[in-house]
Image (cartoon, rainbow, N blue to C red; front, side, top):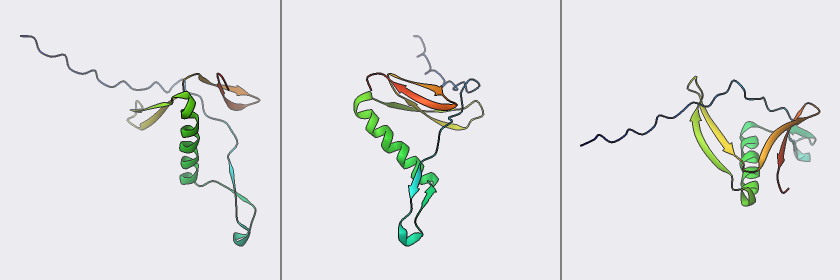
Length: 100
């Protein structure tokens, strides 16, 4: 009787060819009672904005995600956006999508 084939080991995502994201940060409006004006988002706010934006896009794009690890063992969250590609225009990162 043959032994069952062991499950494949997870592969590390190659990061040596990954590009840094270059874009302007979103500013948040500060209420007048707190001095008014604008400020940069806090990390928790920024992550909530990213999740909300991905949720909105997922309605028509079918976004999928996967957890993996870098070669150094650092956890990574990978988002797959069908029909989309990153690019660059005037030194800023762009996200171009089909049918938009």
